[in-house]
Amino acid sequence: MVNIKRVGNYWAAALECSKCGTSRITQHHLSNKPVTAVTSIVKTTARTLGWKVSQDKALCGQCRKRP
Image (tube, rainbow, N blue to C red; front, side):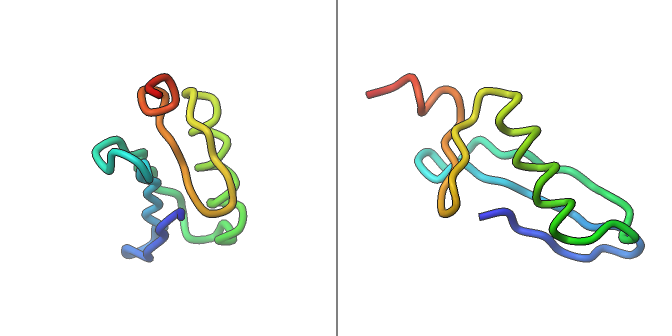
């Protein structure tokens, strides 16, 4: 669900909406943080922005409002 890649001295983390595929959250964190911490931070940010995040999928705020 959260795609994390190492880019130089950073983790590049991206979370994409499972339904529409156009909304995404992208963050960069220093590589001295563990991957699990980066995953947690990205999920927390998404929830703050109104996303519904579960273990296997994430829905953006617009997709949550649509039936």
